[in-house]
Image 1 (cartoon, rainbow, N blue to C red):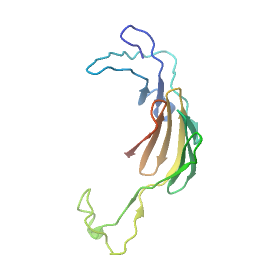
Image 2: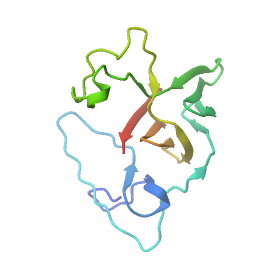
Image 3: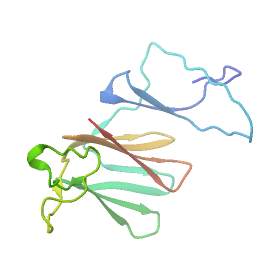
Image 4: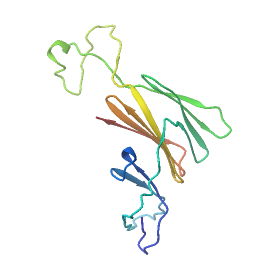
Length: 168
């Protein structure tokens, strides 16, 4: 990444499946209100994207730590800020069977009522593996599942995590 003066901008590059394709570049930008900044992406002969740590679920960003403690049907995370007790997070993807199940769920994205009044939700996705990416500016967990993939990203400039889910 080059700025308008053609100076190299430090960045973290995360690519899908450890290739040089389907990449996202993260870099800090200081912007003033109503300003425009130009950046140039230049391909180099050597790859400089972050390498994944397979099934490594301990990442640090800013003064926070994010750790996967379990990955079965759901994902259990612990997120803590230096000096404080960790907060547990449970991520599950579930659905209710529709009363129209014999005919197919014709309601599309909406299921208007479950098949039975005491219906329990079904698991939609089970995670199987995950990758950890640790860079200078970004820390990211990528969780790979049967029906969907999820990325959990923390960066060096904020105290929150971003969770994005992609249906396959």
